[in-house]
Every structure is written in C-alpha cells, then in structure tokens.
Image 1 (cartoon, rainbow, N blue to C red):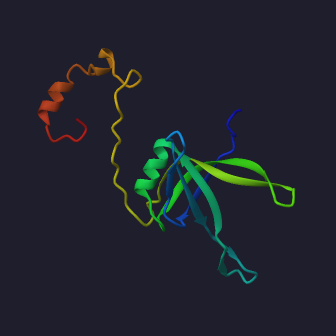
Image 2 (image 1 turned 45 degrees about the vertical axis):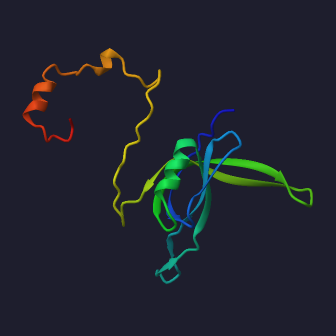
Image 3 (image 1 turned 45 degrees about the horizontal axis):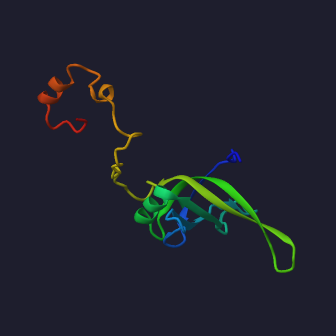
Length: 155
C-alpha cells in the first residue's frame, strides 16, 4: 500500500513526557500528544484564546529513541506528520475511525529555546562503508589548507 501523500506541520507543546515502548520483535515506538492552539478575534475584534487541538502522534525505530531522549512535557516542537487512520468496532457494533499522526521529522521550536546538535554515529556496514573514491579529498590541496588553520571547525 502506498504512503498517504497528505502531510501536515504541527507546532505545539508536548502534553506529557513521550512514552517509549518496544514491539514484540524489539522495534521502538514512541507515542506522544501535542497540543496546539492559537487565537481568533471576537465580534469586537479583540483576540480570544482558542481551545487547544490535541494531536495523537507516534514515531518508530531510531526516531522514536531520539524523541524519548530529547523531549519532555511542555517542550515546544515543530513536527512534520502524516495521518494513519484505522477503523475499529464499537461495543454497539458500529464502526468508528481513529487517526494517529505518524511523525516523519520533529525538532524543537527555537522561538523560546535554544538547541545543540549531537550527531549520531552509525555503525559502518556494507551500506555505510565509504569507498576509496569517497575517502579521497575532492580538493588535492585540502591537506595544505587544514595545516594552515588547525582550529578550523570544518576540518
């Protein structure tokens, strides 16, 4: 089945700490609830707070682990999500639908916070092992430039 092309961007705060668990075969999954709100103008033109919208979200595998390690209740985030709708039978026999938003990417909102990036080192395998051609510098004088400025953070 093809992925749903519908995507959304949610900016909101975590309503609780992310809940990390793993499936029977060891795959990590995190669930979280984002609350987003805004404001509208009343009939007099004054801004009025709006009841927050609650978004049930989940992420899988490495992203789930990273979310659980990074975010806590109250953190303001920006998430790129897509819907996953499922159906179920109610007790009265009727059919109901439930939507969970799958997180493709998420990060902190930098409006009221700062962030530092810690890169994840991946294990080198056949897919990640660099070839001799990839290891060679693109510029034959790169070593000379590096020797001129040992404090250069891009080396």
